[in-house]
Length: 216
Image (tube, rainbow, N blue to C red; front, side, top):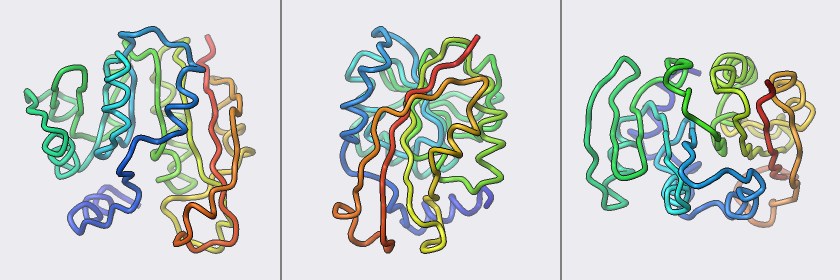
């Protein structure tokens, strides 16, 4: 799976992963991170998620990264925001108020780009990647986040043989293999959501929420 896969999805409007509301699990569990207002929050593979609007409304500074120019344009247009735009080695930066969205490759962000991030919110990034890229994603991108960064990770669990991702099933055993020892992992909730997603096409479907803490 390469960048063209996602660019094509956005061009064709095949964005069933986009939610038309703020994720209730974010609203429920974000306070567990106890991050002070004004903290910078990293949102990888951000799309046009309304969760970024919610985070900014709570007093946080949001830094998102998204490869699709269409997603970035739609995010600002649909939320009535007019961004200031500039370019850097990381991509094209769009900033409006407390939200900055970089149109670029998440893997192109280095420690300097992420140095001010006190938190990370991952709802649709890890589960968007196949197994080999999940390992690279955690080993490279998460490793560039600073010490004592805290995160909220949301995953899906289902019989992988019943459906070709994305989104992919990521079991707790894999989460606990991918993130330590750089990150401690604490599961906050797991619950069945099959009744809420009748068109998902599997026999069992759960979502899980984890708190992540950068060690060091």
